[in-house]
Image (cartoon, rainbow, N blue to C red; front, top):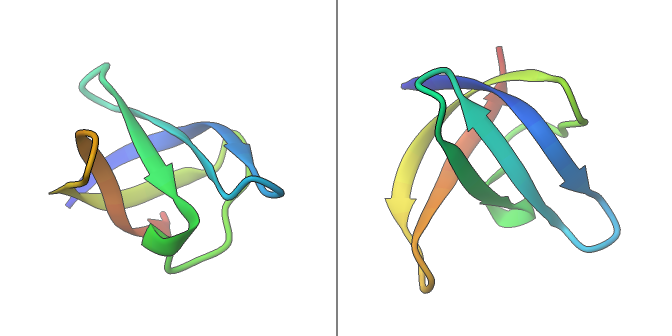
Length: 62
């Protein structure tokens, strides 16, 4: 499991970005969420290959 913080999440559009503790940013789509998230929430997640690159999946509040 990787850890990070939700940098941006647009609930109406269903996507956002997580800033990982390693300093990288990763895309997250609403379909990859386990828990409802908001900006600045601490989260844990896994990384999976999506259609356009890496996506955060199994995103949970930390």
